[in-house]
Length: 435
Image 1 (cartoon, rainbow, N blue to C red):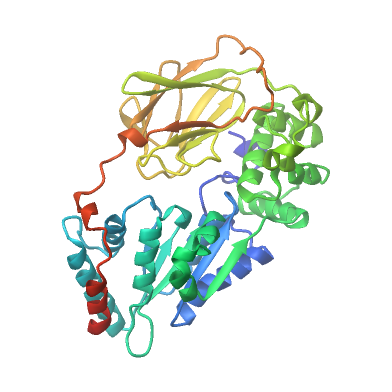
Image 2: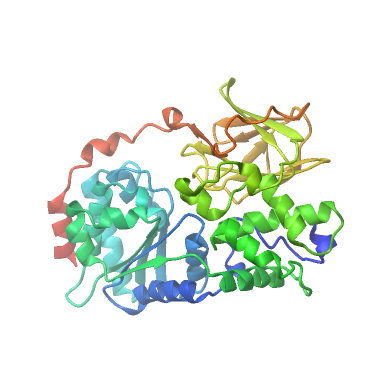
């Protein structure tokens, strides 16, 4: 890679949430302070929203790294669950084995745990990431949990983090009671152009850079193509460093940056997010992309689902729509793995996924691929080969670059306890009486 070339100790623009790289912009600092307020106040219930890639998960990881030892934390990231599964996941986070329990037993176990922690002087905090995926039934469970209290204070503190759709859900008439329980709601907006420049320099400095790597003239261009969204900034800057490294350049200038944008086949951020502003011809905003040098074929149980061509740069695979290849499956993490492609070959890297990356049956963190290698991600497989010839030009250059593949038909069956999803008000009342 380019670390030695740019005199860096580590990769500065990883997509995985690393608290060491958090840039404390004004907006991120405020959001972190609101998270911390859940510990200070006894009625802590905070909602943090932000666009995809705005830094919510990194902010949560930073907050957790600094949290006091007398706080017991449950962190839930898989939110496409039933009410029973949500309660089971919550208790599993607290160290129980609840997967054979019915709802009344789940609630009783949770009640005893919360009272025990309170009696021992410990605070209990629940953090739910990707909360926009929670159903209204699960959000109702969250509301009832937030009401568990002693005669003096609430027993459970709660942080819900998610995309802007979470605010839409909370504002619906069906969730008016939950909305009244929320003490603070805060939206994590994008970085300004000045903050973005400081963000890039900050990450490079943390990675070990002592000299300016990105020329000042590149910052307005980076901002136009990323909109100040941290994850997009990371993707573009990493690709630009690869392009500069391939050309033996020690800095990234405007020309190299535009080559990186061409490799990503990006339009300006406003054009990508507002379809009515997309220019008539992609060539008017980006140079002609480089030809592909690799190919991956996605298969499931031997059936070919999709093919993708790899150009020099980074190709991210995961469950959410902001990936280059989206695999909609419970077995796939939000950002599961990446393929880093150069003219000489391709390297697969695990992005700290839950279920890991397997190469020819063996789990790997990072490995250089050879033609014929089979990479397994969840229940899907990727077969790698070198590109034999450039593809024919697309008929519509404005077509989206994200491939969405559904694995929903192969995901795990719903737990048999889902038939107990109905609200158990009496069980929740027993929690309040036991408190």
